[in-house]
Image 1: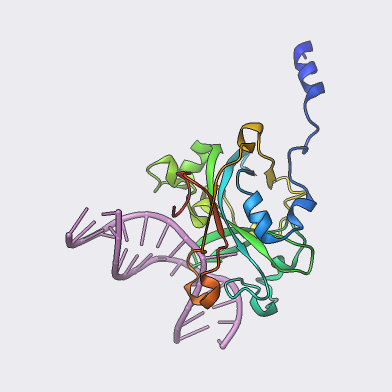
Image 2 (image 1 turned 60 degrees about the vertical axis):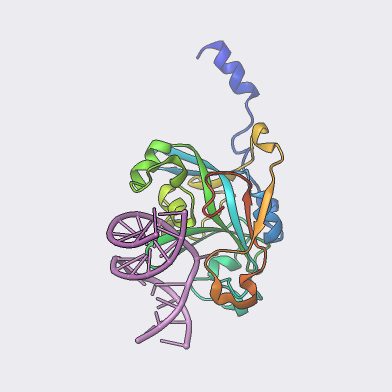
Length: 216
DNA sequence: CCTCTGATCTTCT
DNA sequence: GAAGATCAGAGGG
């Protein structure tokens, strides 16, 4: 090994140092949903590293939230991951076709989660394009929860995965360039008209002006 | 640009 | 038996 490479390695951060830890996720989903914006979603699959900047999220508040699967304390085989510890993945099949990825928040026993709705692809774009043949532009690769699921190869095998420890799926801190403050737009959530008054609550968050957002 | 519709299947009634 | 945290393609403007 060349000396200069050794030097670089010596000063490199320890493995996993960039990854978000348990404490980040063990908080109010409304806070986590907003702070996840700008962070990096990473998926290791098929010997590939896929990554993208999170640009759109929604918060689901558990027991009282009519739009949340855990509404009314419903604890079933399906919703069980929502009752897990902060940092757990909750993956479910929507409309029989799309896998949607949530990140559980709060401590174990308190159901709440953040739905990842859109990501700006940054690594493994060619690999994603093969899974997203319908996308004609880069903006269409993961500009929606179902598209994101397909692009990042999200499926039931990742349900209940612990993103704090997993080697297949995790969240990394923003780089310095991404730490610049960006305007966050706050709107009602999408596709939950059945949730009555909860359909109007401002629980959807996205980065202003980002072209990868599902519905600006 | 927009609206409409079929796809597809797990979960719960 | 119905509904759903969606998407893509078709058709019209």
